[in-house]
Length: 204
Image (cartoon, rainbow, N blue to C red):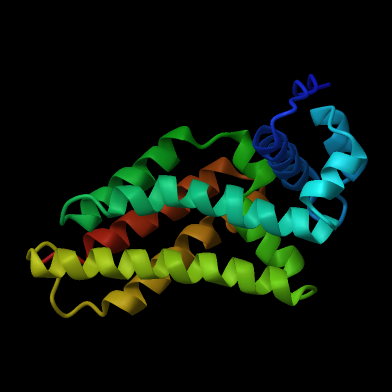
């Protein structure tokens, strides 16, 4: 059993602790089955303090999307793609790292963004909109990076950047879902390998 996070009187730290525990709980159980009692047990935060920061379980879940999942995606994808004018090289490095680091965790947990899309988008419009904003931003960042690559002569000029970006996002998320459902790390790796070949086809 995980050790409870040390209780803090700092409101920002308390909020951060709650978000970290809620993220772990949602990743493990899904949002609907997530237990506020288990979240509180992991943090040693009182129920009153929880409701001071998040009026409802839905507010807590949306905060996980906005303040944990979105920044993590920005760190892993947006920041590298904002560097230089070779988006295909950066994408290849990201996918290569994913292939090399893939293990049983991808089968157990999948992608937190993808999980919530599948679980909550049909049920809750606020969740759907919050998740859609992340997908749109991811696609936008990719499209901008591909356009810069075209200007630098490193991406084929006939590539429709926005459409290619949408396909890449769909490919990445699809590979995670395929690997999780097949319970096969190898299937996940092979899928990402094919996506790398697609990226290579975008070079002049």
